[in-house]
Image (cartoon, rainbow, N blue to C red; front, side):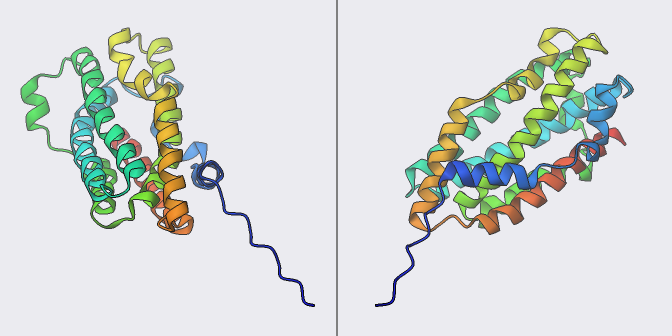
Length: 226
């Protein structure tokens, strides 16, 4: 009697997310600005540009996450993940105020600022994913990107203290993202596991999304440096 091969074990969300982080982490040297900030070689003006651009990014990403949460309304673990991200953007905007104040940016300057195309490619692509990407796949791609983003923020926060003498309030935005976020990690695993269990998550597609997100992330930083 012919033997039937046992079914391959179904991947777990933790394994899928770990694989995405490993596969999609950019080369350290690819982010020119963070390397310059780490060495204290970037001009102080880049922090003002960063703050101005982030006001635009945060507003756009919050809308994208809210839309993804609505699209995933029939899949509560996925919807909860994006709802948590949307609320996180609101908190991030509050933390950004300290950097804007330290850079002496006025409300008029923030409102009338003309953003750089390279800095806004990331939120533009995130909006595209919000419209047409499978939410569970977007969750995988974003989780990989957040790992890189958090590392960048940790490096910048340390350099702001050691090389640029920024006060704690000005570093708060970077500290916010640099610190571990267990709730987001838990929600991400639950969202992705739901996607895997229901057949909605396709890691290969998520990696395609993630590669572009990482490229646009680098474009953001390098455009701030220009």
